[in-house]
Length: 82
Image (cartoon, rainbow, N blue to C red; front, side):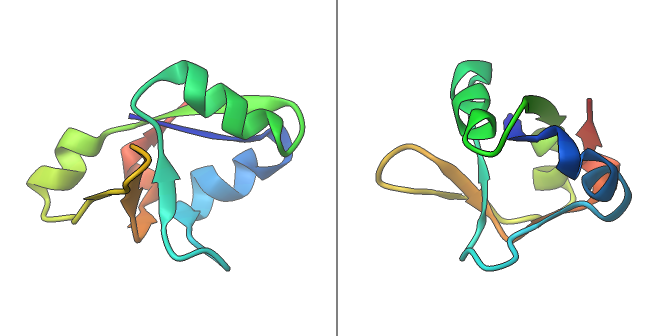
């Protein structure tokens, strides 16, 4: 899956992972187009690829919202690639 964010968040994300911060969950997109739309809300968009299969195999839980957004509590940096 994918995560869209702004360019100014990249260094922190690649170092610390994706935190939910003041949200209830981290939002992930099944396609790049949706992730791009999300990232554009915060500035120049950057699309990150998330190794969700590996996360699932490692026991990380995912949730599917009613509007089709995939959710999780945290994405460790080891599962993220540019």
